[in-house]
Amino acid sequence: MSRRSGILEFAVLGLLRESPMHGYELRKRLNTSLGVFRAFSYGTLYPCLKTLVANGWLIEESGSTPDDALAAPLTGRRAKIVYRLTAEGKEHFEDLLSQTGPDAYEDEHFAARFAFFGQTSRDVRMRVLEGRRSRLEERLEKMRASLARTRERLDDYTLELQRHGMESVEREVRWLNELIESERAGRDQQRSAPGSSAQQNSTSGESAGLPRRRENDPPPDPSDDPAK
Image (cartoon, rainbow, N blue to C red; front, side, top):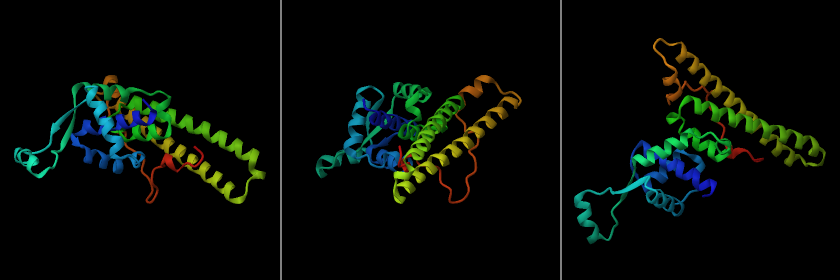
């Protein structure tokens, strides 16, 4: 399985965990809620759905009313298929949510993981955020070293593009710092709250309270980095 198809399967399972959907609804949610999938088409989505069904993680159900089912042969229209997450699919998605390996820090995978942070435990969120920050700090160091070596050989436009890439990475690092501090603050508050327990802290998927962003200050988009 390619990395990109693995990200798509993860996102599809996560969306269907919220509620059953048919293919059009899924594609719309992928396009509007998870910008990383803007380029995905039906030709990519449906093979993914078939694979998930074959693995036993989804089941297909008719999304039509009884009257629609009777009319379908007469009109020539196919009944809509609704995809529903199975118990095995939910267990598989929860296993994917718990993984914090290097792939979780890469641009596209991180964007998909972050979209489902509301369903992810705080400890896992922290590991993913800190891993992503470390990855970007390494990238930033390499970009600065490269710019220092090649600055004299670059024309003004290429130099400006390099600076823009560095600023994009620096902006995301600042954003991650804010998120990490918010997660830590929420964890400390839970530990000090009466009746709290370590088990509740480790399994809760509730948000610690995201940092406030200034107006017209959108979250960084990994796809904006021209140097990745």
